[in-house]
Image (cartoon, rainbow, N blue to C red; front, side, top):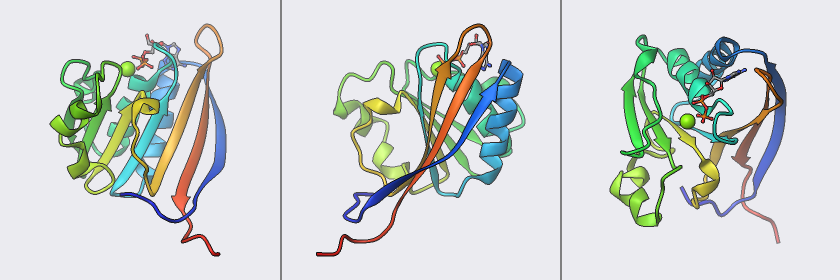
Length: 158
Ligand SMILES: Nc1ncnc2c1ncn2[C@@H]1O[C@H](COP(=O)(O)OP(=O)(O)O)[C@@H](O)[C@H]1O
Ligand SMILES: [Mg+2]
């Protein structure tokens, strides 16, 4: 998981959503196109739509009962079963790195299934490959989703 090469960020899209339903269907499209194993890092204020987007991502990964997708605020992680395990992590209440070990993050992050992390700015782990989505609340029901992909491009030359 630790990266020695150069990690390059590439902005791939800026997507507008005008409703929670639209955010969910954008999520479903993202879910259908993710690599497995894969990681999605979500950033954005409380109420931005991170959980709503995660519901769509899980749907796109084959989860039929999307009502199961809710913020795992007390347990830090929920696991859903689609075409692969879906680990839904919410770090809003993270108290320290020890919490991350207690949920076994190191065993699945980037290694098995798809992991979606809300409040990913609290994650202090270098990843080789991930999709990062920053959700900006543009007022009322309007949201702007900034989607970036980053991947390791190889070792730095001297
Ligand atoms: N375009 C939109 N996309 C997502 N959520 C929206 C949108 N417009 C309004 N909302 C509302 O914003 C809230 C988002 O909640 P949630 O997904 O739990 O956010 P977060 O997980 O970022 O705290 C919900 O109440 C939802 O109905
Ligand atoms: Mg949430």
